[in-house]
Length: 281
Length: 136
Image (cartoon, rainbow over all chains, first blue to last red; front, side, top):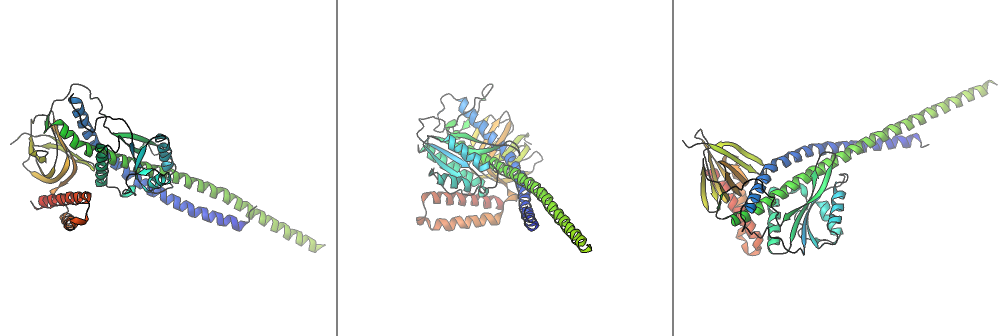
C-alpha cells in the first residue's frame, strides 16, 4: 500500500488538474454559445444566395458559366478546417482520419485553416496552397472572401478541377461529424415548381459570375463557424469527462487514504496495548 | 406617398433589416438603381457605394453597402450585402485610419505585388465610401 504522504500528494495534484479541466469546460461552453449564435446568423445570407444561384442556373437552358462546367479531374483542392489547439476530444483526429481516407490515391492540394490542420498536412508532406490562415480563431469574414478569391482564381486558371471544403458539422453537443462539401464546379439543385421569370441586369451569366465568389465566401464562413462550434462542443465534452474522471479518482484515492490512516491508527493502538500489557507482567 | 413593400437586408453577420420600406436606392452592377413597390422581378449584383432606404413614415436612412446582390421577386425585395453599415454605425476614425494606411501603402507602390496593390486599392475604396457616407 502506498504511503499516506504519497496518496495525499496525488489527491492534491488531481485536484489541481480538475480545477484546470473544469475551467476549460466553462470557457468552452461560453465560446460554444457564441459560435452557435454565429452559425445561425449566417444562415439567411447563404440560403438567399444559394436560392438565387439555383434559380439562375435552372432558368436558362443555354446557361454556361465556367463555375458550373465539369471537366476531367486531374487535381483537387481541399480547404481543411481544424482547431488551433488540442484537448478537444476527437475533434482534430476525426477530421484528419476523414481527410486521410477521402484523399487516398488522389492528386490533391490543401488549403489548411487552423494550426493543427497545418501541422498535420506538413507532416504528411502534402501540397499546401497557402499558409496565410494559420489560426482559425482569427479568421474574419474578409479572410473568407480572400479564400474565395484564391479558389475562384485557381479554378478559372485550371490549377484545380474540383474544389472541396472539409469541416465538422455541429449536430449537437454530443455529436460532431466531419464532412466534405463540393464547392466548385457548382452543382445547382433543381428548383421545384414553375420557373420564376426575372430581368437579370446586365445578363444572367455576369450576375451569376459576380455572385459565385460571394456565395463561396458565405459558405466558407458558414463552415468555419460550424467547425468552430464543433471544436468548442468537443472540447466541452472532453473536459467534462476529464473533470468527472478526476473526481472519481479523488473519491477512490480518499477511500484508500482513509483506510491507510485507519489501519495506521489501529496498528498504533495495538502496539500501545501490547506494550502496556507487557509492562504488567 | 409611394406605396410600401417588403424589404429584407441580410449580411454574413446576420439580418440587418426585415420590414417595410417605400424606396431602396443602391449602386448596382450597371449603375445606381432604385426599387419601389410593384417593381418587376429583377436580379443584379451590387457594387460598392452609398445605399438609401426610405420608410413609410417619410424617414430615410443612409448606409455604406459593399458588394452582394439584390433580388426582387413577387414584390419582395431581398438585399444580400457583403457588408452593410448604417451611417450612424460607421466608425469614422477607423475608416480614416484605414484610408491613411491604404494610401501610405500605395505610395510605395513599386515594392508591392499586383495582388497587394489590388487589396490596398480595395481597402482604400471601402474606406473612402465609408467616410463619404458618414459625412453626408
